[in-house]
Length: 452
Image (cartoon, rainbow, N blue to C red; front, side, top):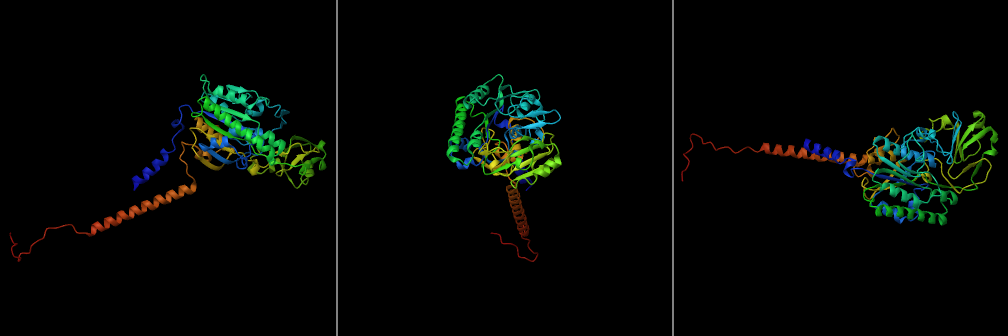
């Protein structure tokens, strides 16, 4: 019985292996299609992406970080940290101590990025390996005095094809060998803002083009003989919600705009007040479709407290509502809303030697992607908010079992061992009850035995 237990648990340990089983130098390409809402996969056809998933893995729903905007979530993916820890707390930021501002047009100051260490920096500094990037947010900034060995300065005018050509060329470089690379594309986010996710007439064409770009990427990886050796993750930063000119929250109807500075805009507006109590009181009943929080009152599950760049007051619009001062609606789709909303969630698909084949999982967290990538690359992760065990079922070298299955196996093994023990006891008992053969003893008065 003890031997059976030993072999059972030895089997569990052996099945968990290490990344060395699938490649001497693990390689990983991380791809983001901005604003790719998870349920687009159910509403539209993606033949190229589905082919990619068929021999790989799919996480149908990713709970991303609050706030659900581009810069914060792209940094959460590559650091495994929530915004309060990595410091990129919004697309627009203000630091009162230095009087510095951050925006998508003014994002190159390392000051904003140095509160965390992204994986491309770790990959180069920890193992002396090489990273490359085609326009992932932050990769053209000297974070901790380090950029990827190969990178492109961000320019939205540069097409997807050129970005892919650069990535393929860098991955084919043998001196130095690139082990980690990132690739970013602005769609379907740009069109989601323009049309809104519910405009199927326009979005069907946009998403077909996105799928064609995925097909192009796979085709070029195959043509370059990289397909079988490289691990590819395709994911996104957030989803998209439908907005309407009938769902506007006008701050000018509630408060004089001279009493505060609007640091970041809808749907999570960051307010720097001149008089905190006055501004809070004026805004708290401004709209039934908006929540207002003092910084210290922000719900814990947002992980959005402990950073000086988070402004004293934040406003959180309900799904589909837009916060403005007095202007008209500028976009029919938006993101940034509460990260518990399914409309805000992206997906993750992955393919390569590190991943299982044909496996689907319901959900993980955005911050779980980072420890998974570190595991694949054999890197010691920086401190992070992610959990590798949430993603380990995606990995080929991990023994994967959930809690109900584990309980079932333990109970099953216990029943089998108990049954075997009982059978052994019964068999021993029966054997003991049968007398062994003994030679017949003759009595003294018996006749002599016949001799034939």
